[in-house]
Image 1 (cartoon, rainbow, N blue to C red):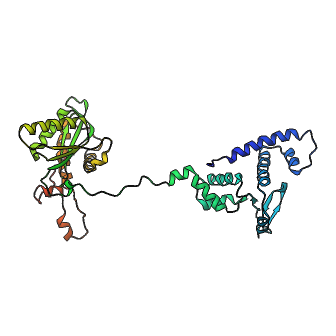
Image 2 (image 1 turned 180 degrees about the vertical axis):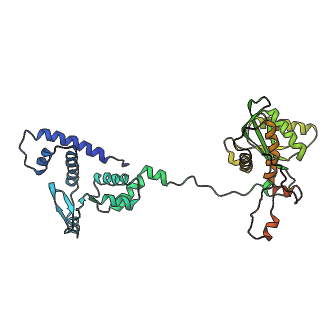
Amino acid sequence: MEVRNEYPKLVNISIKICLALKKFIKKVKINTEYLKDLKNSKTNVGIRKMAEYLVIMQSQFKHPPGEKEINELVMKKEKYGIWTCAGRLENTSMKNPIFISYNSFLANLLCNEAHLKTFHSGVRQSLTELRINFWIPSARKKMRNIIDKCFECRKLKLEPFKIPEMPSLPKERVTRSKPFENCGVDYAGPFEVKNNEGKISKCWIEIFTCMSTRFTHLEIVRDLTAKSCIMAFRRFLAEYGLPRKIISDNGTQYQLTSKVVNEITKKLELKNISWVFIPSLSPWFGGFYEAIVKIMKRCLKSAIGKKLLYFEELRTILPEIKLIMNTRPLTYIYENFEDTLDILRPIDLIMPKEMKINLILVP
């Protein structure tokens, strides 16, 4: 049974019982100390205290201490016949904790109440709070069981999904090949731009990235139709040639583009392009181009901030962002001067090593 915060509810039920007893004992003679004090209780605090005593007395009546426990804990009966534990501290000013049996249901409720009072703290702090007023044999074990069943603690302490072991890189990532012989393609956006009339419209950036060199090409399109995708793909082919394999998500524009491209290459008696679509709702299969999308967005945000550009302005900035992306280091940059002379960049695998960033910064 899962233990919840039921101790206050149990006390509230006992308060109702005490109020009923109080009405009843007005008409009868009172012989016990408990009923006399209950009759004289005038405030809500006093009645609540008597209700808690009633709960404790019922628990001890059902689960009384054994002789071994009485001797070991130097127990004695105090007010209303409630067993308390003095131990070796009987002569101190400290309050003797009330004995509660380990097997009683009240022990579960009290441990849970102490755990909640300490805002879901660990065993030590919850146990410290419990032992201010109560003594439960093997309380540490009981408290640990209560905390292990606590839903909030399990929710906070549970580790996230365990990341599986990294698989081997695909053959296309580690095999020597021509630039963009194997590549991935994806869209980023939408991005808002202004037209010549000042009206706001949307555009997207199509990203082509080489699987082996990590070189990236950017194309801007006005919509996500298959026609725009084909036009962007034609511009890409004019610069880098026909790829052998393309990986993308299973968007409808890509599916139609792959059919059109394969039909054209078949008519021209060229080798068909192997267009591979990743599974639906599984972007991690395209992680190699999703990482490039992240880099591109970061560069674009750093370049324009929150400015709203004209379409031509954004089309001008994209090649500059492309240059920055392709001159990023692929290897670790060491502190030693000699080791920094051989920094490998994507552009070094396609263009001469002397290629540098030459941008005209316009405020």
